Image (tube, rainbow, N blue to C red; front, side, top):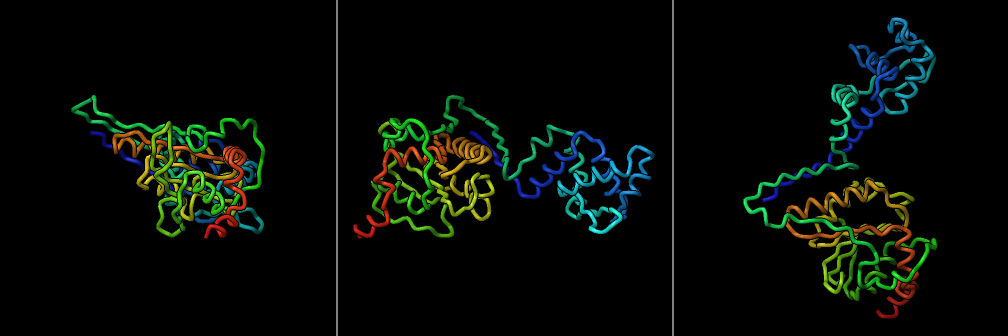
Length: 304
């Protein structure tokens, strides 16, 4: 049977990977980094680093490299003159790992982070004919309730709707009459068992983001307060998982959704679907069904 492991990593691993990438290729940055993090001395003058390089680095080259290291968060620079640099405890603690990853592209690529989770699947099957599961990308046009979208040509930018308004529009399209209130322990923002694909009903879980999130590009860390909303979405009792944001959804978010869906599909040995509706998709949906996404609050008050 399939055995799978998903490693989502942490913010620490993300920092280590970023630091290692900044030092790859060696050069003056690596020389200055190694000098600052050698021995017990905490503060190094740029002049001292240049003098100890045996003529390999001028003081100007040291300060140029130092500026880059400061920008990458690898060292601190003392504000007063003369120019001096200071160790950072977290970097010092992970120094060996950073240097090992800096010199090895394969190890660096294999390190799991929140933005780049790694999925490992090992299959030990006595019956090779058994289904191993698969994850299929679902587009807006493939959902039966959104059929009118197929007639919409071109993209027309629209003012983003609040999350509650967009959710109410989805409810209307799927014919849901229940109440879907947000609460702290939820896996998703909207759940329905009425989504249809080629006439067949599916249980679907949606994570919705309105303009209140305050960004134009949705990175993985922006999905939820702790950056784990995509992971929580995949815990819902559904077979369709969708991200929605009336802006641009970064490819790292899409990749994370894809890998987590693949992971669950392999575990459960069945077919699952994943999709994402960005600003262009949402605009087309709203243009195809204007009545469902306009004056929703007024209609809800009237029906109440």
